[in-house]
Length: 627
Image (cartoon, rainbow, N blue to C red; front, side, top):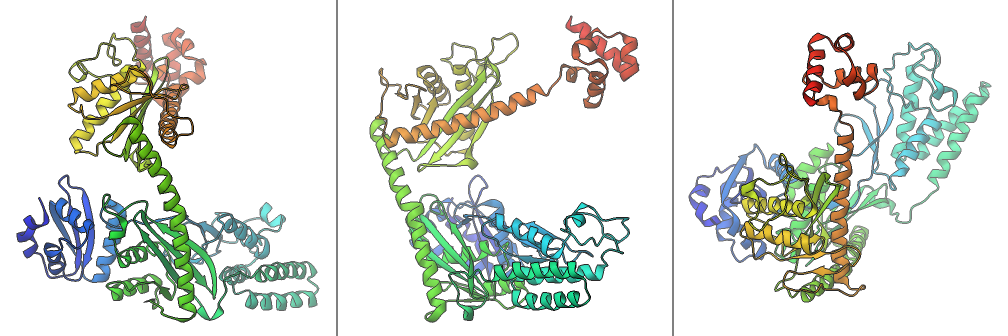
């Protein structure tokens, strides 16, 4: 079904603001968008063919349409952003941060505020400062607030009724608001205000106040307090004098978004300027084309900037002005949303000249450099590796999607397997899968199978070949039911036996067109079904390194999962199988008797003392049945 088949439904849509969702045949969300007038916006898709490859691909896949009506366009924008984060639609532009630096939170809503490290800004009435680069600087600054101003680090409810201060007071890292006679809440509140000035960077104002208090304490012969204030002044002066390179005082608080869009993806550089200084640089990027198959260059710069504004400021406080390189649609809606987030006016501008344009050009140059660093060199190397692998194996298409399987076991115990995915030379962690080998039933086993395949009653324990056959059957039975995606190449960790097991699994599922190779350890040669001799690629070959990297990742995932399974097994006890014995009674039995063997030898009277008559009879019956 395509978008034209939904014409009747589109004609009945409401003429109100809201969010629309394009859904695929399997019910997956393909695209989420907002609209001032739902009917007009969705109707525009009926004549949108030919505008871009991305749009054409989307219109061919749409099978269903859903809408959500909102009270305003701003509410529609908020809902759109939430749904994009929740559902990760394939045709929306999804940007990621290259870092997640922390903030410092001053809990001004508490009676005795604290300074805490926070990963995101919440609208909870507290004061937030940051982000801090590097991340360790946040904790260093938090510790400095303890030493300079005596901010508390405990979680106690402060009512001033504590008998005596704790050790933090003795080592001069807290002024002890918990003891009213030592520090009143008003004095502590003043220290919290000093901390806020410090975190806001208002050091000149803070230094003047601290010097006045230092002189006052000295005149009153409170020399220890005066010395502490003197040390605080010196420390803050040192921090104040550390000038940053990028400084333009007249620019005030604003962000500048630089942009580079190319065939491999998009990069947005956000320069955050506060008090006329660039305090942070955040990089947003897309790994691949938003539609999956169409080039990222088909996406307009305005679309990328609009997505960046929504996703970047969804969990950050926007400044008074945001400078962007191109004009975005619905700029009024974006400004209204940003203003509601900041509780003040926020403007989105496209500067043409002057210092603001210079800052924007600087951000754009950095975005271009980041793009070439992230995509060009890497894409070239990965393209060469994929092309070399295609030529070496005689494949008709480039192996853009590679799936690799590995089995991990120790003498047939806790046998597990892993499947990892590599697309265009990049590992896709969100698509990894792990399997517990359980054995296939008779009608599920491939007809070519002549070996044991599971832990059925009375069967021998599974071997690597049977386990590989099982996991391949289970993986591609699921892929068939979901309609894809199918790999261009399957890599099996093992030799000719494991490779034969994979092909027998393909045949049983009717997937004889899939191509697999086996990569043997130590020899590092590739086994193919149609070649008697293994293929030995040159050791320096980029294609061999790519296959080895995928194989090693599958091995790492399988071993990690196997160790976790062994840990869970080791924590189990034979007593867990006894009816009526749960964790508490198991601990009681082991604590009293010392071991499972001693429990097995215990009399009914001894067991009754620990777990009662009924459970004691159950324990005896269980071990009698085993004998």
